[in-house]
Length: 93
Image (cartoon, rainbow, N blue to C red):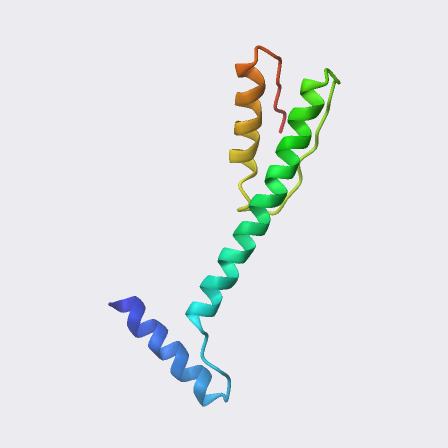
């Protein structure tokens, strides 16, 4: 209820300033597209990492990304897969 009132007030404020009100549907569609793109690149990095491990190459990776991009989840997935194969995997922060 309070969020609805807050959002209504924000939209009215923007209209008074001559700015368009946000389009939630367009924003949601944009977010879905970003999510698909991110998943594609995550998969590419995961597959490349696993191929290097499968080929028997000693590999050292540095993962650098902004907050909220699922780095912890991704690294947990990679580490669990490597360890499940009885290989050694060490994460250092």
